[in-house]
Every structure is written in structure tokens, then in C-alpha cells.
Image 1: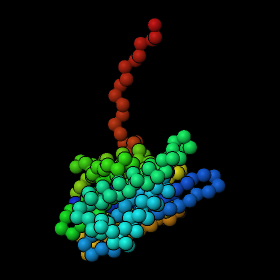
Image 2: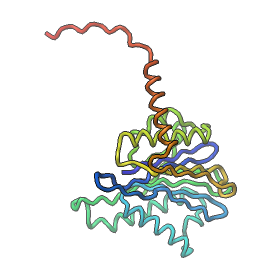
Image 3: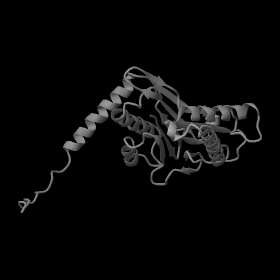
Image 4: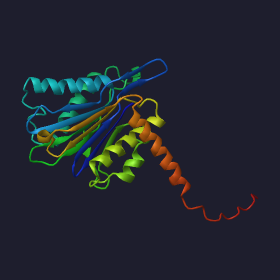
Length: 250
């Protein structure tokens, strides 16, 4: 399983992913799901991937090959981020179709989901979630984040904390708390954790990146402190009002 998230702030974009592809008693594999394309002078682009590893690898290989071969369209020539989301969606659908012969009957699910984000010079930073069907959505105004993979455990803290005007440092901490909540509840999500902040005009100023390995001191402390604060907050809740006595069952 996978967990990836992206946050669109007034100050830029935050991306956070785990790197686990398989969790079992005997083997844990890791594979980066955060893919940066920062070789351009006028744009900074990031793709996060979740789902079937063969599909995501094939899509990203094609993206890189199209850049190298200077195809008629590639992510370096797109005029808008939404065009890149369309392009990734099309590649994903085409790749899944190649594997369709195996089909669900063979126990093989080729579906994949992506988050495409970044900024092209002269435009605002944008981020989109690309569904397995190839269509995509962007963030909601009141909740400016997107998630793919194992999303349910890490969503509540994002909904409560993240707003468009949240500071980058607070948003990055919130992303890590969201990741910690997910790792606690699902053993198939785990380190290394990758965290990236792309400020507005990152193609000129540069981005901030950190990888947190298994056993990282900061991740451990963050999870411990968050757990303690949650317990204290629960203890400070107002007591229940008097409960009416239930009538005996007839």
C-alpha cells in the first residue's frame, strides 16, 4: 500500500510520500513515489504515484523518455499544469489497457493513481489528482490538499489544520503527522518518508527536501508528542451531560 499527499498553500506546494511497496513478515521493499522534474528553467514539476508498481513505473518511464526524445508534447513543453495532468492520465489509461489481458480474473489489478503538481512561470502553483480512468480533480478551496493510496487514517488532521494561508513549516509538520497516523494504523505504509516544499517560483529559488529513514529521531519524537497531546486534549474534554436512565426492556 501507499500513502501520498499534496498541499497547495498560498506560499507554494507541499508533497509527502511513504516509500513502502510491500510489507510482510519476511520482506519489505521500498520504492520512491516522489518524482521531481526540476531540469527546466521555467517550471518545477512533481509527480506522486500510487497503485500498481508496473503501471506507475511504465508511465514515469514514458514521461522521461518523451522529455529525452523531445517529443511533440512533453511536460517541458506544456503550457499549463492541467495539460500535464491530462497527459499523465492518458499514459496511465494506455498502460493499464496493455495489461488488461491479465484482467481481474488473474488477480491482477493494473490501476494507478497520480498527483501532478508544480508551477509554470507566470502562473500560480497547481496540483491535480489523476484517477485510474484518466480524469483529474484539483483541491477544494476549504480543504487545499489531495491524497492517494491509504488516505483515511491521515485525513482528519489535514482537514482540521491545513488552510491555504497555513505556513509552510506548519503544513509540512501536519503532513508528517498525517503520515504518522497512517503508519500507526496500516503496516503497509512506512519509511523512508519523503517531504518536499516547492515555494512559489521554485524553479528560480530552489526547493526544500528531506528524507526520513526508518528510526529517524524527529519522526519518532513527532509521533510521541502528538500522541501525548491527543491524550491530554481528550482528558480536557467537557464531561458528558447527565444521562437519562433507560427504561427496562418490555
